[in-house]
Image 1 (spheres, one colour):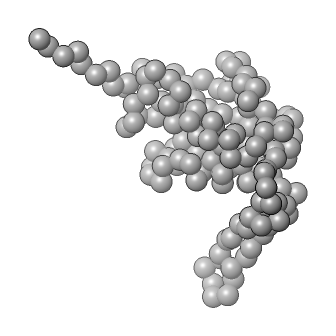
Image 2 (cartoon, one colour):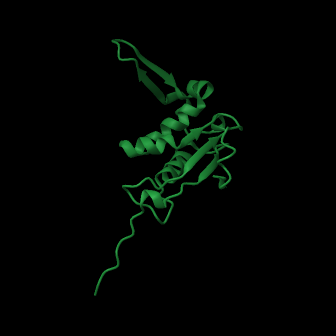
Length: 146
């Protein structure tokens, strides 16, 4: 008895769609895990680990995302210029005021693979602090309310 062949998606067979996600009132971690799943394509039947099968994701209202517990005052973001003594730290509260899009992007980035394909997936993520975004032409496919 012959076993059926496993389906493996080819890059030319995949047509990515665009999804708009409204982050208003959403918990940051739960929202990020759903976005990461969509970027990887794990929500599709044609998911193939070695092929980019995910969709483009546009996140709006990133400034209105919420966090649980004491993360606003305890979670710290670090960045380093490479020079001695130049380690900068920022609290989540301050980061949400200045660059809320960066908070969502870093959260999703941590949930994607640390490979070339993970960087390609992250390029498909567009995050905006407000309601408007310049992707009107592409976003005819699907609006997701999560």
